[in-house]
Length: 120
DNA sequence: ATTCTAACA
DNA sequence: TGTTAGCA
Image (cartoon, rainbow, N blue to C red; front, side, top):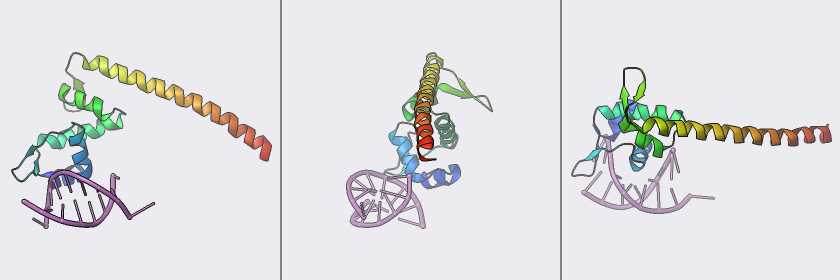
């Protein structure tokens, strides 16, 4: 199928589908015309990409994760050696980001509180 | 009619 | 990301 059909079947617009390819998430074949040709499995792949993106992973990480997951019907199961370690590192990165945001929020609360007592 | 690349009020 | 231009 070409990009138009994949777009319709996944709900992801063509612009984004081309972007995913640039990020190494999709590798469609090309017709002599230059048109991208996607395989049936790409419909599933696009949905996986959406799921992984929603999980907060970067496209760089996803490009490594995609070829290393098996679909047991409902969940994505890691199949490669180092993948699990990589995912744990990503989780740690998220934890750090959350902690930094919490710090920023506390700092902001101080400002907000000061502003309230000054203007009220 | 569709897709492609490149680029920008 | 949208959108448009100019092709094939």
